Image (cartoon, rainbow, N blue to C red; front, side, top):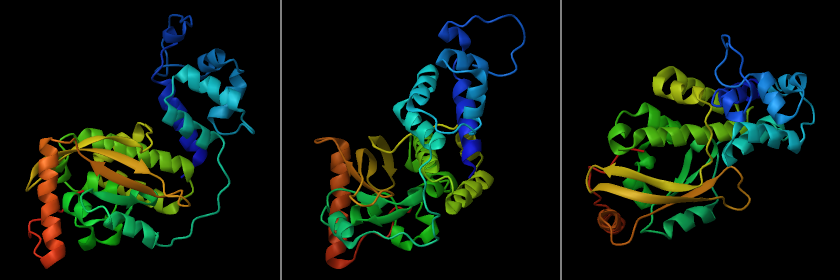
Length: 292
């Protein structure tokens, strides 16, 4: 992916959200060719020359200072995640080209997942690939063992499996979050060829993905709440937390917990009891979910 093009499109999309009146800038009568702020108006509000800002937005400015990044971010009212994304695009770290090798998880992490039989837990790798999971996560989210390797990918599940519309009652919010994190990853690794392939495939096969990707929204995956409609036990609302395993900058450990005393807790306990039975006699119900 072209880092300069990403920076340009990201800043254009953020400028479109801000009106000159919001900054107290005088607007003269006449047709405006762009929505939101013009480049010259943003430069004026940020205290830099218009020529410098044009070079900055086009990715041609060298050694961009943190002060300029902060000034532009302040004018555009960027969120913390958007500020991180801007810095990644404007001041990219030098990284070696990625080799096309299967991503692996440390055996110790798998043992950690298995030690939490009552908590759905899994590990996300590069491009939101699911590279490790425990039994309860498989029962709640997807039967990952029976999925092709490339299909163990959250964006593919969300946008290419029609059943996810029923599985996620707030599907639009899940789609926003998924694309937002994928954008954050793109900022860190703009030269990842497999990311370019994934984005290309999803753009061709999913109009919804194309629409979300074009917004240039970014959101890091940290914590939050989502509801999942399990076809057997019903709705389960989970609070998820993500942790980065030491020494694994591209991996995230994700855990799901539920509110004590809630219906979600009752439903998750029922699901956990089935996974426990499966461990004992391999008689897990045949209608286990096949959804992300």
